[in-house]
Structure formats: C-alpha cells, structure tokens
Length: 158
Image 1 (cartoon, rainbow, N blue to C red):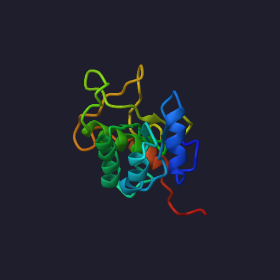
Image 2: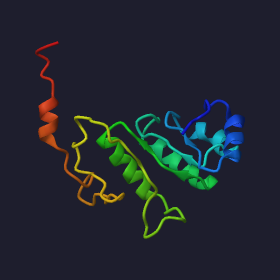
Image 3: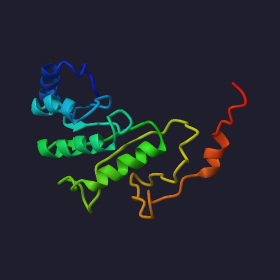
Image 4: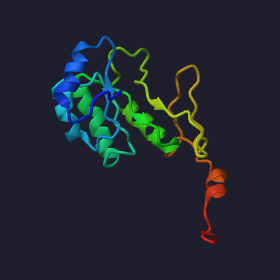
C-alpha cells in the first residue's frame, strides 16, 4: 500500500509492473481528478479513496466509478470510524459488482479494528469476512444515541 510517493507516477507504474502482488493506494487523494494520472498510467491495481479525505460523498462516488472505467478494483479506506465505513459500504453497494465477486458481493472495505469510542455508533460488524448492507429506513440502521449523549460536551469545562 503506497510504497512510493503519489507524485512519482512513473515509479509507481514501474513498481506495479514488476510486482507479483496487487498494488494499492490513494487514501489521501482529494478527488477523482487526482486519480486520473495514476489510473491512466496503470499505477494501482486497487484504489483506496477515503470518504473522509475526499471533497464530499459525490466526489467519493466519482472516484469509485472512475476506477470502474479503468477496470481497476476499489477497496475504500474507511479508517475514520463507523460513519465513514457506513458511507463507504453504501457507495460500494451502488457500483456494479466486480466481475470476480460472487453472489452480488461487493468489493472489500478496509475495516478499522483499533479501539475507538465510536466503533459502536452504528451496529455494523463483519462476520466471517462479510457484512450485510443495512436495509432499514434512512441510513438503514439506528445510531447509538446513548453513545452520542455520553460524549456530548456541555461546554462547562475546558
């Protein structure tokens, strides 16, 4: 994952051409336009845009769809918590299935496993390497308001 600085596109493409494992990157890229040189030079096998690092959810979806146009897989970087994982999951689910995935499965998401007080903000946890896409009203699942209330700052101490 990102073994070469992203502005060294020719070096990335050369490295990719000589590796026997897929090369991934792009978690700090701000939008689809920045992915174009990397994709057109065949720099990555897998791009990893992050919904929290791009310029909005529409730009995030543009990155995912752009990868499809270049025949490149996507594994969103969703390190910044439960909501970024939820948005990444929904965006991935909106894409046509990758040809190598079975049973309408979507491509993988990077899943943050470090301790984070907001990990349980929404009840999404993988089981046996898969996760069900929430199908309820609105965002499809309930936000843990007890957790929000626990961490809400009343402004009385600084």
